[in-house]
Image (tube, rainbow, N blue to C red; front, side, top):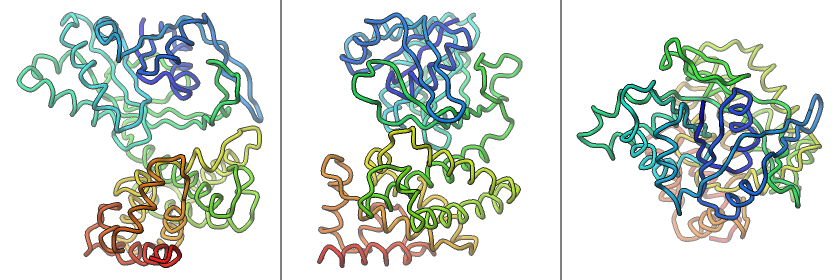
Length: 384
């Protein structure tokens, strides 16, 4: 069995690639970073180090890497003969993966079992996004290609921090992970992924993860940065910050209970587990890594505006989520391009224009005036 995985970074090697290896797949990593591709090909094994309670080391073998920028034809050939294709590249990069997957499907033997495709991204229904990109590129040829693949959405969760100097291609991760996968697309032939669980309805798992793990992580980062604290664990050691994070997650849990019928007590246990994970002092995770790309994180269907908009529509509390957005607006990191753009836009646009362009909210939406107010407050702090 063979799996082609797009994105040979820390998540690709330390989470998705690790589980595919444990499932018995030969691993082919595809990436555009030449030094990383060369480093992977220079070794015949790497180690995934789990740090924290219950952590262990796992050695990964049976892999190689291809540079998709320099050798796209090689990647296409591998896809044509693969069993599984996965991604961990970021939702905005899927459009660059799509042409390679489409070309691989075109070369695939029509009598082969369908290629099993899963985009493992921090986005809702990311695999659907990839499929739609492939379908648009294929045009009239889509009908002939559609039967050569099955597409399943997933929800993935594992904290993989910035890596220590000199780690090479080894990866440090937390012990906890979750990989939920839509089961119905696969019928009676699911992929072999130890530890993953296949579910009939993925939506509650995706939103529970995005609106708890991602919302909580980013909230901790932005309040931590505002307080001048460098790491996620230390930020949560501050009682005031911990209280704000907990309040934001109580609001997202209220939405999840109302929308999906999830049990409030189970959601409380889940929140507690998430916060324990964030407090793992063995993970060298910084507020600057977690807080990067604030414009994306403030967009319409992301971890703040997404749940807050739905909560506001239902008349549920959103004070803590709006407060977290205010902290995000103060994220000022000159090494992060989106942070630089965020601060420039705050200086150049009026509050209503900024709110509409960044959050995607309509001015008539019940959340709009709340967000506009924190934008105006940030602009007042900047002297705009």
